[in-house]
Length: 92
Image 1 (cartoon, rainbow, N blue to C red):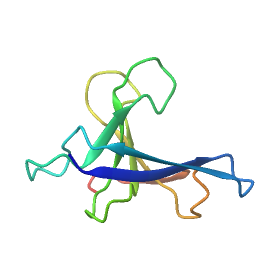
Image 2: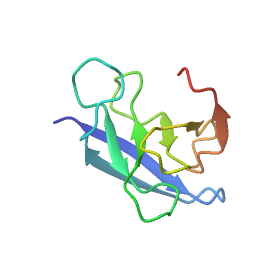
Image 3: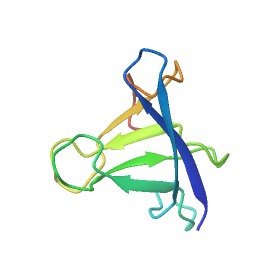
Image 4: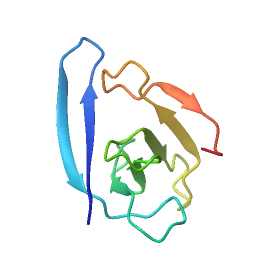
């Protein structure tokens, strides 16, 4: 499995960097390219941080906000502060 790097923060410039083994495939290539986790705090690991461009760094957070098993909301972190606050369309 490939490791994916990602950061979390609260927007104040202090970031916590992480790296985890990819354990989910979202791109349709057959290779793991995302990390399953509970991003939205609902107690279910039904969300993901996705390395959509294959560079080893998560660039999309994908959330299942209605808990139906389908990822339906997608966000990026354009500031690099780890807040994942820019919503993008479903066709990433």
